[in-house]
Image (cartoon, rainbow, N blue to C red; front, side, top):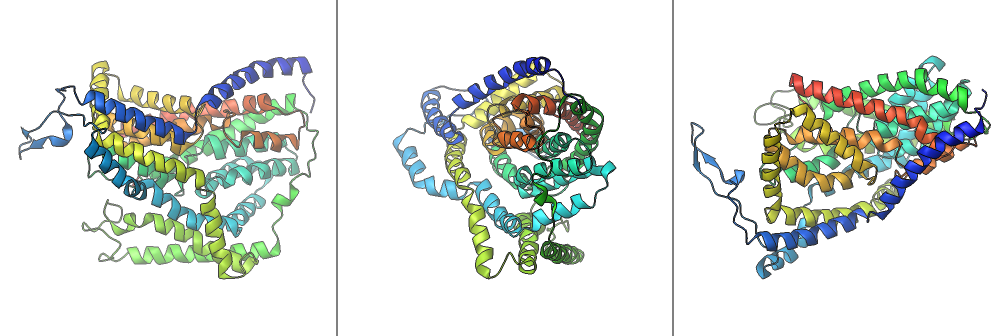
Length: 522
């Protein structure tokens, strides 16, 4: 491989680096997400006090009552409630603990992390990824690496610290450009973050915010944790195929022409080594996982199964199977993880299992703080009726514009992508946007489920090009193991084609999906 002239490469990277530095400076000026919610809460209090004196003529859709023929027989206009009145302030204070404890995403995330954390800390997830990658021939490295990256979404951020460096090692061992391997894995883990054919911790996390937002207009509205599963499963196939083509036809040829491999190709080679104990543990854990799947399938088969809903369905809202999907996901990670640990020797007593749970939840401190303030903000936004008023007025504006639905969805994707460049956390952004966007778009006929799906596309695609991604500097270091000249500009310019192409084809898939009227999930 021959290097390009230094001046040319420096000039190209200089422009990109300045742009990225500008994004970084803007992003660094943003306060912590918890502070954003605290400021938002104060603004809601002030706005509720001011607007409570205004008389609105907008009909509150929650008060509309229709007869059997669909004719409206009773309705009332919306009224903003002053949350600074003493009685409402006292209620806010007495409800504060309950508001936090009942915040829908909180328990969902914590329960899921109990199982996933054990599977990760006993080494079950890591062993499975290594097995998949070791069985892959050279010509199929790119699709297999992308597939493993997509699977890693079920384990949260595990892919960033495991799959990405392994990608570089595997490509180098196969005689291919190691940075192409890192880029391929990074694209699957980050730009394809929401695409997965397996349930992930992100599904219930976002669903909680979506459901809370939908209930601003429809208090009884339920959103299934797997409401985007079908679409995201199809998206994973799309991301795999497009990412494979980009890696082999666009990214790697470009790297071969301009970036010399001068690092230590043996760096991180231990990541591809699977010990005998790990192999035995993984076989045992995989056997338990398959057994659990078989038992669940058998339990669901009878028409009178207690896992079925009142209508006999398994996936309808209210069906016990769907109501228990979060603990089931946790259990399907927990039990195989424990068995793997016992066989592999990473679990020597029950204390190791509970220590794994504790360590997993110990990493959730920042999320818990954010969830506390997000819960208070969401409660105030809902109780003041500001959320409903925003939704109604926003819907009226959209009706006046009369934009095609696909334009509205594309705009939502681009909005999420733009915010992703300055706020990294998917849950933090959605906690801010959901109470506004979900009820607003419900008023123009877009379901909470499709709004969430559009958000997930925009949130994912820019993850590889924003330096505000906390793993971005780490990926630069991974690259420098193989090519010491790699910098921020090198990585960003390498990943830009993934971000742009994924954005276009993924948004197009959503438009086609909506146009055909296919269900997004359960």
